[in-house]
Length: 229
Ligand code: ADP
Ligand code: ADP
Image (cartoon, rainbow, N blue to C red; front, side, top):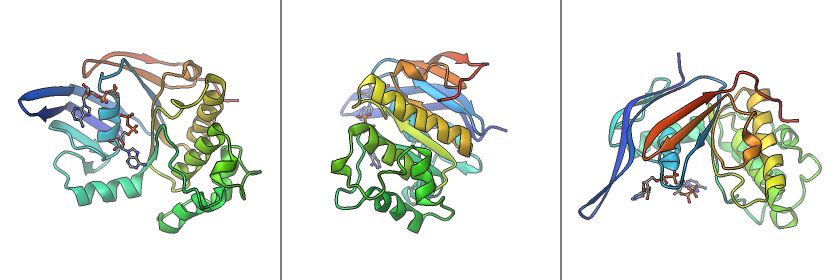
């Protein structure tokens, strides 16, 4: 059975007398341990889909379930609990706490998660075991984003959602960050959905979904998925 199941999923934003159809009747299943990439032009609905999956945004109509959680009609408290217990996020900007060290930034999450990993193990997985006592300002952008990846995976989320995680990085640095995300998916089995334009991702994903105008307009499966290293 899929972990995420959506049928006829739609999201309409109403602004005054203008309606924006961000998602138009999307059908989608995502399976456990899958690594899925969302591609498509700006405005095609990628972030909207990711935000619905992550309980940041509620759909307008249709069905959307994460396992036995119904994401349609859930109230804010339910969505907050869903996000906290099940979802890890990585955004374009790292949002690390500047006054805390790398280890402290990640360890903070282990105090509130119900079944966290060890913070040092999460940092080792992203290749930062030698930066534990540094402050964010002492790290490169790519290293800061790898801390953000460690912070997202340390709570052992059911799903890791990444929205343009390499958007502020150059291609080569972005590639290292993507490799860390792929490694987390392969070693921890974390189901992962990522929006990225970095071409290094091709070959590393199980499936690429192409969005256009709020619809899924293409799907490619990768029979021979590559290892990140
Ligand atoms: P993408 O991530 O592919 O760039 P988005 O999901 O961000 O696309 O946006 C899809 C469409 O929905 C766009 O037309 C965008 O302008 C619109 N949209 C997204 N968020 C909002 C919002 N909060 N209010 C109004 N319109 C929005
Ligand atoms: P975009 O790609 O559309 O510029 P972001 O990727 O920064 O936007 O954010 C996508 C969504 O996630 C937005 O609705 C934003 O409010 C929310 N968001 C961004 N950063 C965080 C965060 N650190 N924690 C929770 N929600 C966030």
